[in-house]
Length: 136
Image (cartoon, rainbow, N blue to C red; front, side, top):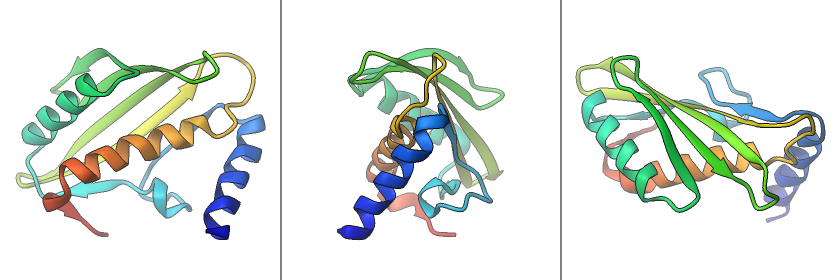
């Protein structure tokens, strides 16, 4: 549990200066690595859009299916607005990947809220698509 608390403190300190967070293949934090699922991009799209529409606090703003981008807005507990872009990639016809970029509006840091938002979205996807999740 101490390790988990240390990670949260580190993210809060980073968040004093930074107001965005992103995932990717080369992320140093394993929690921020690209997620892979053994499911087609079209199925992944339907599952992700459906999940976002049903999640309180998230507002679906824009969908560009052919590019694989879902743009979402979220209000934080402190009243700030986060702009979130969820990008879906087709690895092959039966495998998809998901990356997320989250940024807070305004000049101040986010105190780690973008990090927590990304983890929340990944957690929901991992739970919903547990049978399809691939480890890399």
